[in-house]
Image 1: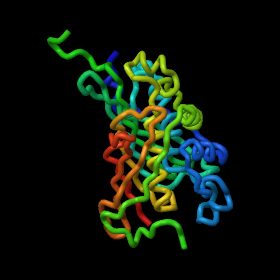
Image 2 (image 1 turned 90 degrees about the vertical axis):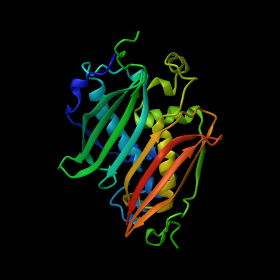
Image 3 (image 1 turned 30 degrees about the horizontal axis):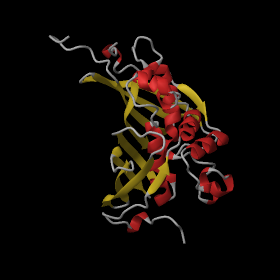
Length: 154
Length: 136
């Protein structure tokens, strides 16, 4: 089923995310990051961080939460088992840190056919609850084989 | 002496120390749990094959996480990374080794652009068009 183009530009409600130290450590372990600043508070403070910083790609966790709101919209028509990741971009204002209370708001930035597939771009704006910008995340997903058939072809 | 690079002294063409990781199925299960991305194509062969894949494949973001280690390991301070982008060019399956490679492309005052990619054992690019902007 093709994606619903009418939802391009739609902004979805933000999800709240409270950043815990163990979650940051768990994520750092999962990507094999062993630098003590991501695991040990004393090492983080010695390096000038107020608390444990997240590894840069941790922001995807919030993007996924925000994305679940978007992808879960039945009006969008996305079958997540057909999804392959196309591109990913992060624009950082500052690292995410343990203790941050964040909001992640997703938006359908683009949806377009590319051959037999479709490209869906999700943009997630991550801010603190106080409104401080933290990170903008852009994920482009490839929805395999869902493009509408072209005119004159079977 | 800091083990990290001094961004004020880097020059175009400087290579970053490579990072290599052999990807095991357990790594993908662990990454699924840590990231919250439970798309079954990363842990369930039947689902992966049903959508035309050879079997389970690594999360693109797992590969990007490994490539990002090359940048954080080089610069040290994650706050120095202002922008990070990749294209997911090819799949990589458990049992294969991913190697991230990059070099300084441009230096403009305190701002440094690194171009990077990550490849499998055959040299095929798994991540392409990688770009990172760093600033002191």
